[in-house]
Length: 230
Image 1 (cartoon, rainbow, N blue to C red):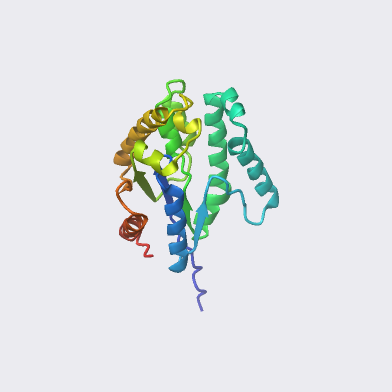
Image 2: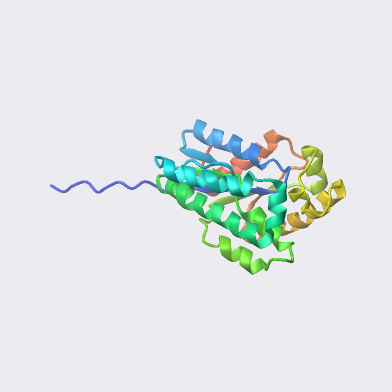
């Protein structure tokens, strides 16, 4: 009598959202995550402040401390440390999030909805002459490649209307006026559009579309590209 062959769990899919500040990434990511769960799929939503490492409180505490250093710090500290430091600090954060949270979830068959992908950082550093673009690409090259990237395309002026206010970082530390925000964000968006074209991302033009229309288009892309129906 032969023993039954062991069953293997199909790997989950990594779904990432990219777009300028104010494009609506987090809102759409949360809605698609809920829709995946409602449809019976195992899905995990990860944002830039997710630090829970299942069944390992020590690693969770370490990841939370790193998150505090990178994202929950005084703006003066950010400017004092400089561009190279923040590139490597961000690479450390993304490396641990990928290794400790994303990869184990995918291996267990859970789909991961990631609304804080590193692609925007690549775009920001691409318009920053102080840091070589090749260095930026290299420090993120080992991260798990997404199975589907949604690019929420919206102009900077329209995004500012949605946001209403912005931080110094969102204006590239170039000034505090609306035009400073628009000028910097449009430069970053051009880089993201180049990435989208090169990577075959699912492009969602959100400026003239309601949230329901954007969600419907994203759901259709999930079904078409990943065979995930919600």
